[in-house]
Length: 411
Image 1 (cartoon, rainbow, N blue to C red):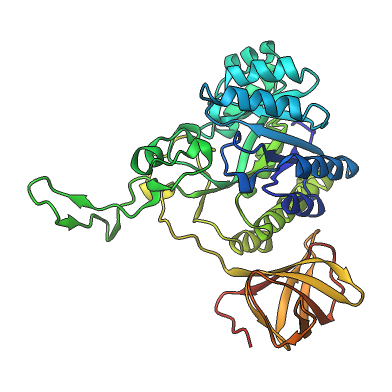
Image 2 (image 1 turned 30 degrees about the horizontal axis):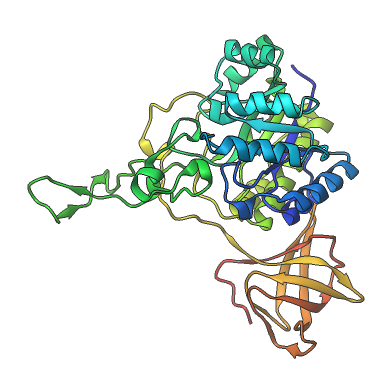
């Protein structure tokens, strides 16, 4: 048994999500460099935000890694070189790369910064890990297709830090290297523009019957050709910890603050409970219910135990995200007795709303007044606004989340 508890690595798709991740229990964060990180710029951090994110993360005693892991074309090299020089004074803890040229530039321009090899490099064996170790990398992010057992062997035999995805969206392509969206839509997943063509609801057309689309059935259900389920390995936490994996990674830089908060606090609680009493550890129904409360596709364990030989639906699913709850609002702090709320779904005066916070905190409150930015009171808060609210109930922690169970009335 390996007694080292791995870090909990959480996505930071914006400065606010960085702050939420830190408050809800992340040990480390990964963020993107604009134009260089497989996500659109709105899910990356510009330099002023990166400076603030690094300062906040280090003040909390945590680590922060920056992704420069897009598919690097010739005209991307000058952008990368400029970004590396421009961030020369920002002391982030590591760079995630997926290209040998990017690796060489990073080594030359930021030799003091650790380099992690992105999952995009599809590292899946100890010989490849040793190759990257000798080249100067300090960590590999395993291919999504690796089993937990393989991850443990690679960690033991390579002397390399191993990071593994444990929760979030998966891709139908090997380590996410897919051209389907680029081919059909001209939008590359490597540039953060994936249109999720694999999850479209495809139909079958016979060559001699153009225009006659035919649904395909499999044991009474539609056949799902490509769309992947979401990964969740919470139940396998003891195996993951004991394997020697250094970092457990949650996917989701483009997900909401609510997603980041709730998934992080569940895995934080689970890791802390396992650390305190490994022999008594048990995944509780409450934790699983919380993972169902965020937007996701049906969960599976991916390739954690090898390639599936059973029904296709074990890994494939529809393109309809599900959740038991809606994100209503997020607290931005207090102004006197009032709370500033960033509104995501409407709520009304006198409504009772559930709230969640770090360390699995939670409860109920009643909205007693709502004030708009212009100072006028209103009976209802609307999406996309920031309002002041007075409430009756618990005092809220920083970055508390308000949520509503699906199908609950708003009045």
